[in-house]
Structures are given as structure tokens and as C-alpha cells.
Image (tube, rainbow, N blue to C red; front, side, top):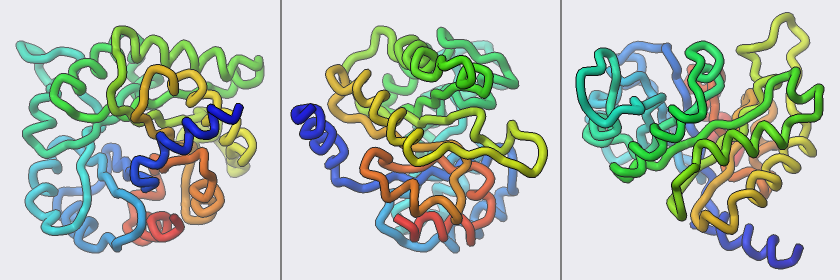
Length: 257
């Protein structure tokens, strides 16, 4: 156990800086996005914006001297070719992306994205030195059956098949704790001990194979809970959805680190 704690400290000490990623999904306009980044406040955390593909080039021009990185929301599993509507890893690189989401819960659920496709996407991103943000997590039924660790392990092993020591970000997205997939007003959220346990489990699966990984949380992060979540040493950042659509709430999350 002692060596594991030391190993964790070494890995998260890649500056010790947390990374906060805004996932705008299919929201905002280019002009709204430009105004947004100009209104972002400086904090201790590294900031990345996962904007719609059509925004990326304009955001890159308007970032100026602000230390904001860009992320793709998805990438094609194909490298190049006659694949209408797809966006390649090379295109994301040219648009200025340092990161890219892969296997987001909405992609898995709405578009039936499978583990083999996710693995191909990860490999394409790494070829162009874009750090994948690999999203994993269980749904309510899987959690109820006690399959959380089994599901996460399967997702990670499949996503990283054939891949060795490379920089990675793993985003733990407990699907049952994401407001998008919950009906009614009684929104469930993951408890602190749930978050700690799963982040530690993910690290235990990967730490012997990957020296440069960050494990972040993505299960409905907002200004009300961000400080409690981001103060955990096991949590090295956050993937923020709905709360990132207003710059005021995203600034509040940034300032909570």
C-alpha cells in the first residue's frame, strides 16, 4: 500500500495542477464562445474547452495570451478518406486541440459507440500527439447489480488495447449521477466515498502500465459541489457539462480549486 501511495503522488505531481474541462456539447454560437473565453478568469487549474468542431479555429484565434487549451468533443475512428461528416485526428490537431473526448456517455448511449471504435479513436489521437480523455462509467442498472468495477475495467481494457505508456486522462462518468440521464427533480449524485473508491480503483488498474495519467471526475460537477470534489487528492480535475455553459458558473468552478 505504501508504494502505491508514493506512486500516486509521483503521477499526480505532474505539476500537481488540476485540469478543468468545459464540455459545451451542441450549445452556444461562435460569437458566444468567443465572449465566453474572453470572460474566463485565471485560476490555479489548467483549463480546456471542448467546443463544437466549427468553433475551434475561431476560439484558437481569440484565446490570445490566456492559458486555455482546446479539446475535440469526438474524433473519427478513421484516419482519412471518404467518410462524410467525420472529423479526423489530424484535423483536430490543425485546429489547435491538445485534448479530445473519447467514449463520452452520450456517444455510447445515443450513438451506440462500442469499445472497438473507442480503441481506434484513441490510437488515432495518439498518432497526432493529442491526449485522449477517455470516459468510463456505469449506468444505474449496472451499479444496482454491483457491476461498477467490472464495467469500468472492461471499458478501460478495451479502450487501451494495444496501447502502452502514453499520456492519458481518464474521466470517471457515473452515468447514474449525470443530470442529463435523470428524470424528475430528485437528482442523484455520487458521494465522496464513491468517487474516492472508483478513482483509486482506476489508478490501481493503470498505474503499472501508464506513468502519466490523470483521473478526473465527470458526474454532474457544478459550483455547489466542485470544491468538495476537487479538494480530493484522488481527483485530478473535472469534466463539466451543463455547468460549463455559463461562464459565471464555470468561473466559480475554476476558482474552487
